[in-house]
Image (cartoon, rainbow, N blue to C red; front, side):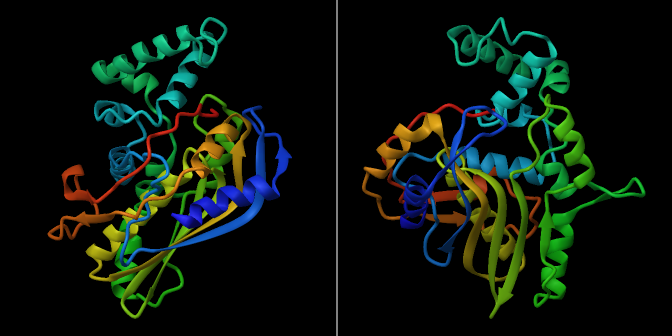
Length: 309
């Protein structure tokens, strides 16, 4: 997938050193954009193995407006484990006892995740990452104490007024974002800030504005996730597919990912796969994991790298 490779090369060539809240440090660029045609191929990175199972389950988790990682843990999806675990260590004053990425830290996190999986009460207390992604999609709190289902409203507007320039979903609930910034026990404010759809000639496109992007670890997930969501919305709205546009504010590579990026850039991409989804599903909230089939995906092996939490 040349667009993604070009972005990594652009950051490595045009970077500035930048400190960040994790104290890891990044090479960053301000402002970047990629575009992917969804009408023929599915944009899943092939220069390292990208786990579509995790992408699908996370997307379904968002759509269910669940903010507790227990569903992900029970489906062996690990991408949010460190956030919940870090919150637990901070709250219990255990950070000095379990230094990050030490053998003790790794073993204790395995025990923590097993408790999330098997103990409902423990999961309720320590597995919740309120008020992240899915809550803002499906249960945005309004000033009168009610909730707004942005996904449902979006689909209704696409069906009734496809020429609208208001086909927008925002993650950025300002009041909750301000409170998140004050309390470091929670996951950070949404990195995916806003996304907007457009219908032209009965074809659906989506553009995502992402305020912060870990380009090595998470951008391949983001590309695939929003492409898949666009496919799902196109199907339930009886539209064809056009493209996915990915726009970044701060696109960065963490300083402890440089070697991994160089390894990935040394690899030759394989042809892109295709994605099939169950054509009988016409309700965005009715999809299950079994409704998706990735075909002809060939990739290089995965490349491990630490998460900056």
